Length: 116
Image 1 (cartoon, rainbow, N blue to C red):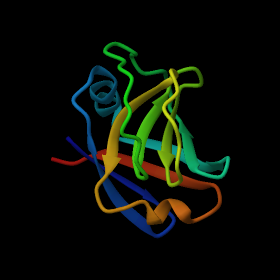
Image 2 (cartoon, rainbow, N blue to C red; image 1 turned 120 degrees about the horizontal axis):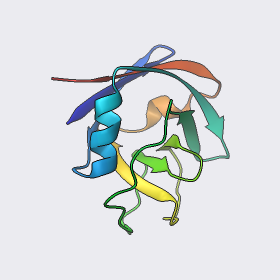
Image 3 (cartoon, helix red, strand yellow; image 1 turned 45 degrees about the vertical axis):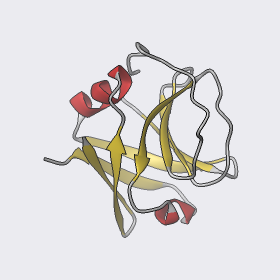
Image 4 (spheres, rainbow, N blue to C red; image 1 turned 135 degrees about the vertical axis):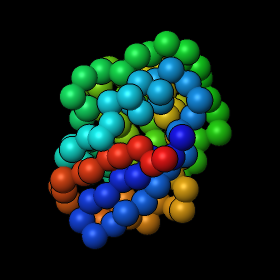
């Protein structure tokens, strides 16, 4: 499944994993959220409700451009800097064409929609 994200002047896509949390996210779309900077390596956006945590599995191939769900807080995480797996993370997918839009600092409205 492909998802389109847009904020500021950027439009970019991600390919979702085949797991229950990613399917739950897809079922919620379209979404109007707010994306904001958090720490020095990620942007976050809070969802209207928590996603299922069924099928949570550790992963070791962390990469820039990963789209994750941080279960304890119920938010999406877009990584543009290096990070390490944490037991609260569920990988939902990965950005298709790089993470450069995430380098734009600030708080923005974020539109999320499932592509056909």
